Length: 151
Image 1: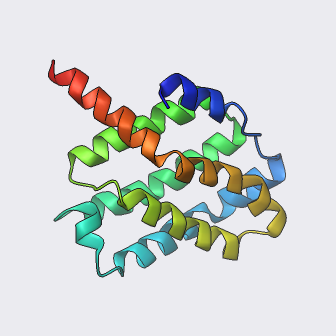
Image 2: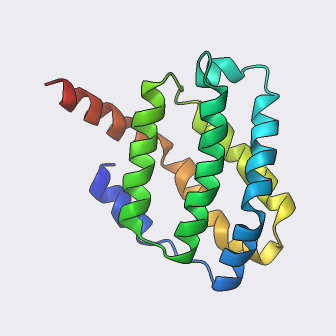
Image 3: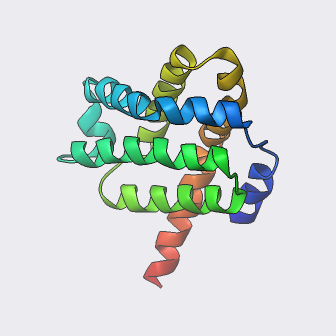
């Protein structure tokens, strides 16, 4: 799946309602903190993110929650795809492994399911599921961009 296919599939996601967006926004900092605590307690953390990258991982968690909050208020599939592809390229260049994202997003989904109302979680989950399902495509696209830059 290439960038255009990713955008096409992201176009099928439905922007959450204002109540769901507001609930997520109200809880985003707490969710980011809980995600950092949970990920930070993993015995395999260094293998996932590389040596000395804990602060970068913590920034990523906060930025992820802020970005998703903004996205839920004004959804744009192009911005969504372009940002995720940038994140994959940038963080991988600092030593984050591709197995970081499934671990991170799965953990986030568990936290969100427990913290958000059922209705809000149901509206937001398709975005996280889309991210999880498309991790291989993000890896392939970011690899292709890195290789193209070398030419």
